[in-house]
Length: 171
Length: 159
Image (cartoon, rainbow over all chains, first blue to last red; front, side, top):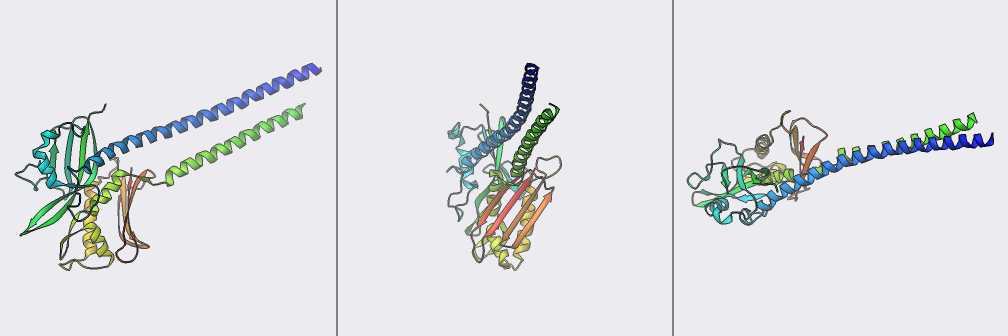
């Protein structure tokens, strides 16, 4: 009788342990799936941030950035006059930035799409550097597009809103 | 025998309830922190920096004022050189820049935006378009005070 009671107790205990283990296992599974989805979101954010940082790095490079030419040392500013000069000697920069194409597009004031060259600058809204085609992964970021504008005998600063778009081949 | 079994069942139930409460608190905290934190975005911060440099149609004796200087002028309720209202120019310029830069619609990844420029409790300018959702990216730029308090430029993009 005592043996039977003890056996029952052991059986009860083992069922209880199995139940508890199953319950904690399910809870752990739920937590792991919750954390892994959070991790995926973080990875996506980091990849996006890195791509945008690549655009920012390019915008801050001496070949593009405004520097102190437009009164203040504000970031995200591209000197369009410099870029047009760079466009003429862009063949020397092939592979320098590790991107397949660089495009600068004016967003505001908006106008019909006109590709820039030395004959129509600044009455245009799109500058293509390196290549005429956009192949690969493209990322863009907002930039101020600044240039010097002749007003009579003087030069005035003129800044507009645009986007710097880079295209690169994914490894 | 029956009573002991009942007690054990109650104990098991209590353990389950405690674990569930802990789980609910944990999930609640993580969901709440996701919703309330503003995700700082490089894109939004770059957008703020870009439009602050935009040369507006408001002029002073030195030439066209950029949006940052136009905000200062509007905050002081001063007029442009041609006696036009600086706040009206700020209003129209920023609305046009926003609508040209962020194409919001149900089909777009951007569902809406909200731009707020304020100095302390005073709202200098505010505009929004589209829908406000829980998933948003935010950028803030603090402009140093010329007179009075610091000016905050806050931009949220909802997706």
